[in-house]
Image 1: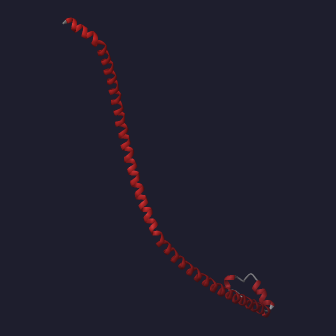
Image 2: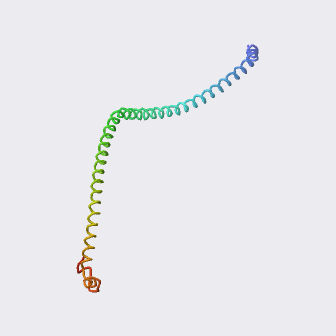
Length: 153
């Protein structure tokens, strides 16, 4: 029996060696598989963070699009308001032009009247000057004459 046992052990040695090699390869593959699974778990965590950031960005983008759409919906009303206000501005500008024309007409009339009055006043001054006696003219030029005493024409 002992021989039989030894003979079986000799026959099983190569099988055991092969089994040990296969077992070692399986252990290596399992270790590699575990390392890959750990890396996948880390990458899944990073992917989840990126997805969360993307979702937050999409939510902000949706909010901005909604605001933009709301602003776009106001455009026709704003265009109508702009047109109405432009008409008011044109009316006020026309009124301003009318007032300016009326003012310019009155200003020109005033300048004509002022010129006429200055001409008349100059003639009156010349008449009065011609009516003065030489004695009166020299008295006006003397040192006793001051502006505070009155204007003599």
